[in-house]
Image 1 (cartoon, rainbow, N blue to C red):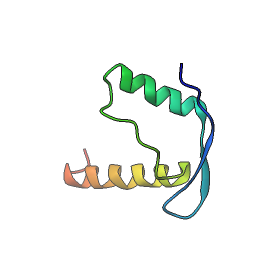
Image 2 (cartoon, one colour):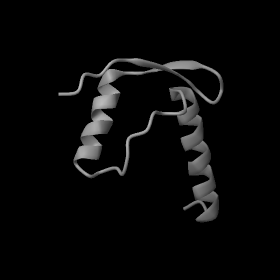
Image 3 (cartoon, rainbow, N blue to C red):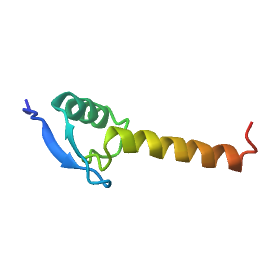
Length: 67
């Protein structure tokens, strides 16, 4: 059984954030079930992930005509 520990990471924006052990286990479980191709450390803090998703959703709505 693998032991998980919280890991402090640095976001693209420079902010420090913690990749919690529960998040790591969740990602490993998805990988083990074949639901994701690989497990990599996150590169963005929560705030930046929210902003990135909003930007992607806006681009998507513009490319599909907003419907």
